[in-house]
Length: 276
Image (cartoon, rainbow, N blue to C red; front, side):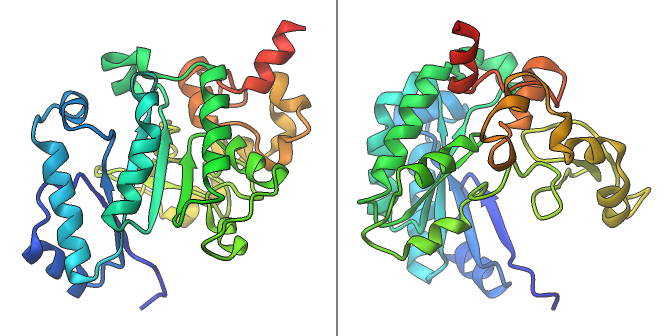
């Protein structure tokens, strides 16, 4: 054993008691289940399967029944902002250990199918401030992927959860750290064909593990060497007081500008600068 914590992501629709037990006995330590909304009909339209919402909830029940920890992975998008409170409540009531919200980024599938779902900067600001405030009373950890500024709000507002030690917030992605894409203690994603990308939101090829080891790619990729040098950031992100503890979502930057070092177009601080 190399001391790795093995977890999986799933849409939950095929997890029953037997599958959950097999996952647990095989060494899987936790499961993330995709629950994108709080209403069944909305999830069905988003996932392309009208029964996916109830199936995912049944998968969560199966995990809970066998003692396999799970969290919900939920997408934040313009069309479901009024469901954020109910989505969080659903995670808590279902017994999830965490609620992980994904700030929708314009990866190719999003550009093709639901480009209107991406939040405007002011919508993002409102949601992130609400989630930071909600963490005080929420009994489980709230994480947000695709928006490093969320953890800045937690720290600046001195959010102290009532139900667990504040130090547990440091386990949130980005907390006290910049965007994790390709960073030494951050993310690297290996796709099914062996291609390596900095993170699931920053989809530019670094190499392939069938040709080079993950260590060689991680240490020597010219793209990663650039990405890790925050002095190379451009525009508003280069001048921001939070540059070295946020730096914007490099995935969103790349998908919207094709320049991974550009300023984050989804950050409300950058919008303010443009208005001056």
